[in-house]
Image 1 (tube, protein in one colour):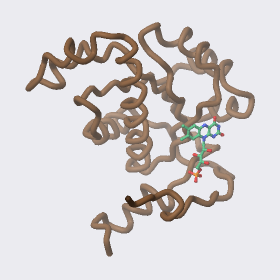
Image 2 (cartoon, protein in one colour; image 1 turned 180 degrees about the vertical axis):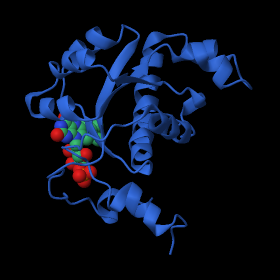
Image 3 (cartoon, rainbow, N blue to C red; image 1 turned 135 degrees about the vertical axis):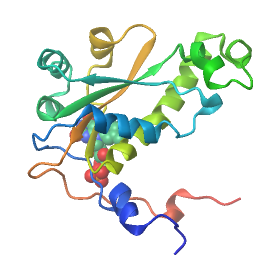
Length: 196
Ligand SMILES: Cc1cc2nc3c(=O)[nH]c(=O)nc-3n(C[C@H](O)[C@H](O)[C@H](O)COP(=O)(O)O)c2cc1C
């Protein structure tokens, strides 16, 4: 009984949550996306920099443009998921720092005046936020299918700009038929923890 989170919530978020490969056609609404974001925005990032940006692919025309950049094995999932989100890192996140870190607004210039520093920070912190986002999708009772099998430069040019780096594309919806592969094993604690 070391965990204080309700066991049903533990199942929903982790033990029974799976990476979906097929989806029903039940829509994912803007209200659900709002509720997911309003939860996961509280996940921590360095300097509260919050560099994750989310592009929701809703129109049929945009979906078609995205599918052509997906790896062969991912194209059908992205073509049929009720909602697809392109997650990217904003390398110019420092512009928002005075708002996001008001007790030390100088952080923008003191730490993040160099683009390479910002790119490294944005990559780490937006990836953290992508993890929070996946758990948030599960908290809404939905399944997420995150993917990095796509043409990053193609997606950046098609949907983003030079200041945004794609991180992953997430299919979102209710799981359909044969939605997952068999559960793969995870490493045990003694395989990953070193105590010094
Ligand atoms: C960042 C990331 C990228 C992934 N890329 C792909 C992908 O391109 N294609 C795919 O079929 N699955 C992809 N996956 C799915 C993983 O293989 C899957 O989440 C993992 O095996 C765990 O599966 P489970 O949640 O069903 O246990 C990706 C997952 C993550 C988190």
